[in-house]
Length: 106
Image (cartoon, rainbow, N blue to C red; front, side):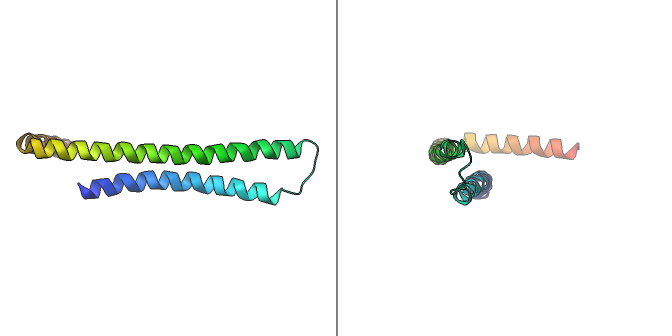
Protein backbone atom coordinates (compact mmCIF):
# COMPACT_ATOMS: atom_id res chain seq x y z
CA UNK A 1 0.00 0.00 0.00
CA UNK A 2 2.87 2.38 0.78
CA UNK A 3 4.36 1.80 -2.69
CA UNK A 4 1.07 2.76 -4.33
CA UNK A 5 0.79 5.93 -2.26
CA UNK A 6 4.33 6.85 -3.31
CA UNK A 7 3.46 6.30 -6.97
CA UNK A 8 0.34 8.47 -6.80
CA UNK A 9 2.17 11.15 -4.83
CA UNK A 10 4.99 11.15 -7.40
CA UNK A 11 2.57 11.68 -10.31
CA UNK A 12 0.82 14.54 -8.57
CA UNK A 13 4.11 16.12 -7.55
CA UNK A 14 5.39 15.82 -11.11
CA UNK A 15 2.34 17.68 -12.42
CA UNK A 16 2.66 20.37 -9.78
CA UNK A 17 6.39 20.73 -10.47
CA UNK A 18 5.74 21.10 -14.21
CA UNK A 19 3.12 23.77 -13.63
CA UNK A 20 5.40 25.61 -11.21
CA UNK A 21 8.15 25.53 -13.81
CA UNK A 22 5.87 27.17 -16.38
CA UNK A 23 4.84 29.83 -13.88
CA UNK A 24 8.47 30.46 -12.92
CA UNK A 25 9.42 30.89 -16.59
CA UNK A 26 6.54 33.31 -17.05
CA UNK A 27 7.75 35.31 -14.06
CA UNK A 28 11.24 35.39 -15.57
CA UNK A 29 9.75 36.70 -18.81
CA UNK A 30 7.96 39.42 -16.88
CA UNK A 31 11.20 40.48 -15.20
CA UNK A 32 13.12 40.48 -18.49
CA UNK A 33 10.55 42.73 -20.17
CA UNK A 34 10.10 45.06 -17.22
CA UNK A 35 11.71 48.07 -18.88
CA UNK A 36 10.16 47.61 -22.32
CA UNK A 37 7.74 50.51 -23.04
CA UNK A 38 5.98 49.84 -26.36
CA UNK A 39 2.42 51.12 -26.71
CA UNK A 40 0.07 49.10 -24.58
CA UNK A 41 2.79 46.80 -23.32
CA UNK A 42 2.79 48.00 -19.70
CA UNK A 43 -0.95 47.30 -19.43
CA UNK A 44 -0.59 43.90 -21.07
CA UNK A 45 2.33 43.09 -18.80
CA UNK A 46 0.33 44.08 -15.69
CA UNK A 47 -2.60 41.93 -16.83
CA UNK A 48 -0.31 38.97 -17.49
CA UNK A 49 1.39 39.42 -14.13
CA UNK A 50 -2.00 39.38 -12.41
CA UNK A 51 -2.95 36.17 -14.25
CA UNK A 52 0.32 34.50 -13.23
CA UNK A 53 -0.30 35.40 -9.59
CA UNK A 54 -3.85 34.02 -9.81
CA UNK A 55 -2.56 30.81 -11.42
CA UNK A 56 -0.04 30.34 -8.61
CA UNK A 57 -2.75 30.87 -5.99
CA UNK A 58 -5.08 28.41 -7.72
CA UNK A 59 -2.30 25.84 -7.96
CA UNK A 60 -1.63 26.14 -4.25
CA UNK A 61 -5.34 25.80 -3.47
CA UNK A 62 -5.67 22.77 -5.77
CA UNK A 63 -2.62 21.11 -4.26
CA UNK A 64 -4.00 21.60 -0.74
CA UNK A 65 -7.42 20.27 -1.79
CA UNK A 66 -6.01 17.17 -3.47
CA UNK A 67 -3.71 16.48 -0.52
CA UNK A 68 -6.64 16.79 1.88
CA UNK A 69 -8.84 14.51 -0.19
CA UNK A 70 -6.07 11.92 -0.54
CA UNK A 71 -5.52 11.98 3.21
CA UNK A 72 -9.26 11.49 3.85
CA UNK A 73 -9.41 8.61 1.37
CA UNK A 74 -6.42 6.93 2.99
CA UNK A 75 -7.94 7.33 6.46
CA UNK A 76 -11.29 5.95 5.26
CA UNK A 77 -9.55 2.98 3.65
CA UNK A 78 -7.51 2.26 6.77
CA UNK A 79 -10.66 2.49 8.89
CA UNK A 80 -12.59 0.14 6.59
CA UNK A 81 -9.77 -2.40 6.49
CA UNK A 82 -9.42 -2.21 10.28
CA UNK A 83 -13.15 -2.77 10.77
CA UNK A 84 -13.55 -5.39 8.01
CA UNK A 85 -10.28 -7.32 7.63
CA UNK A 86 -11.83 -10.45 6.09
CA UNK A 87 -13.94 -8.55 3.60
CA UNK A 88 -10.86 -6.50 2.67
CA UNK A 89 -8.87 -9.67 2.16
CA UNK A 90 -11.63 -11.14 -0.02
CA UNK A 91 -11.70 -7.98 -2.14
CA UNK A 92 -7.91 -7.99 -2.50
CA UNK A 93 -7.89 -11.66 -3.53
CA UNK A 94 -10.70 -11.08 -6.03
CA UNK A 95 -8.96 -8.09 -7.61
CA UNK A 96 -5.64 -9.94 -7.68
CA UNK A 97 -7.26 -12.94 -9.34
CA UNK A 98 -8.97 -10.77 -11.94
CA UNK A 99 -5.76 -8.88 -12.75
CA UNK A 100 -3.84 -12.15 -12.98
CA UNK A 101 -6.45 -13.60 -15.30
CA UNK A 102 -6.37 -10.53 -17.55
CA UNK A 103 -2.59 -10.49 -17.69
CA UNK A 104 -2.41 -14.21 -18.42
CA UNK A 105 -4.76 -13.86 -21.40
CA UNK A 106 -2.77 -11.03 -22.86
